[in-house]
Image (tube, rainbow, N blue to C red; front, top):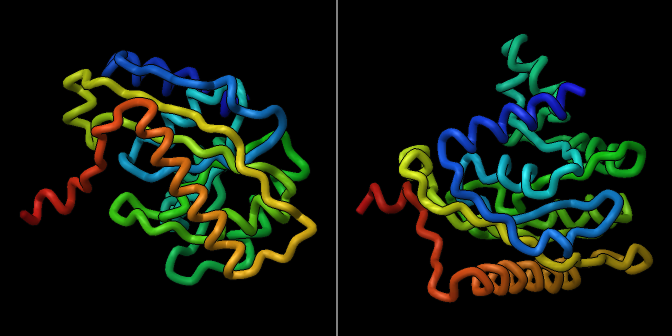
Length: 210
């Protein structure tokens, strides 16, 4: 109930701030649970992913420091977030999302790169999807990378791709991981090209250093 309320509020706020959002190929999203992944390009792109895939509800990871504030902790917990120690990630990073994907009607949003300032993908998402027995759904966000651009009502587009399935019977070797991660990178590129073949993501932090 709380998640649904937050989603309504988030949709209303984003509409007031920007209102220029477009969701493409939502018909590619499978039924049931899945892991929604994409390159991390704005601190708010996760919100657009969740809204675009609505009415599906999602869980997500949040750094454990955010849970120290009791008010914020209440909001995060009831919005299906779980804490992660980024410096020393423990077994819960895998166990919690796998358990929720199996036993709750909740999908998971993850950014395989882990940060907006790196495009190098990590294999944790593959292990979670394999253990939970759910597909990986690639998606891309094209739009403003900061609040300033959002307020200027620059166009926001989210494009969803076809699911990627991982064979649960096969061992997830390093070689297999690299193959799936390469496939994921290719899917991101294809989804970007569907929207705009000339699109290139530029890290705002790197722009500031120039």
